[in-house]
Image 1 (tube, rainbow, N blue to C red):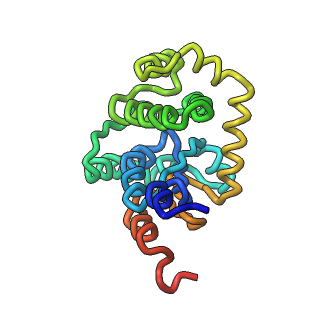
Image 2 (cartoon, rainbow, N blue to C red):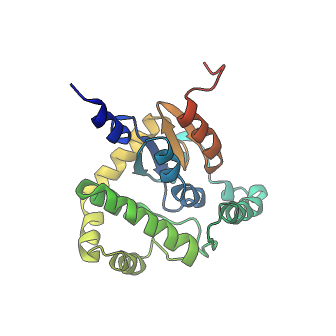
Length: 217
């Protein structure tokens, strides 16, 4: 039998986590990554981070990046910067955008199996480096330099991202995300309810605080 003291001290463990799907090349994922932990913690939840590849989810949903559409590109690039500054975050649009992020994502899952907290720290490091300093996560030497600066064995990380085990792990995570209905990033699943986009922060906060919205089937 679980006593009340255990329940009081372990609410965040016992309640379902907020599932947070992100891509290292997604500006809105960068912004959301800076608030999702605090929002979850305010409601006694933890966050379960999932590194995915947007290109794979776009293909499954028959979508393209908004910057791939000329009529949307200028607005979207402006909105990235505006949204970051609105959230009080530094932002510099990378010169190369978007980029392939499979190696950074494989490193995330490699670290996650060892220590989820280190994987989250790496996610923050990678997102911040790309979107504030323009560090190219698709460049092997730049990526290894960032890993070393983050206290991660860069050679071991390179071996991991080249290993079929972690290539297959990322593929499996992408497949699982698609099966869960994920078609973009950031994407959140809270108690089975999907929320897509950084602009869903207020809805997520309300849902965590009071549960399903009145009138929602």
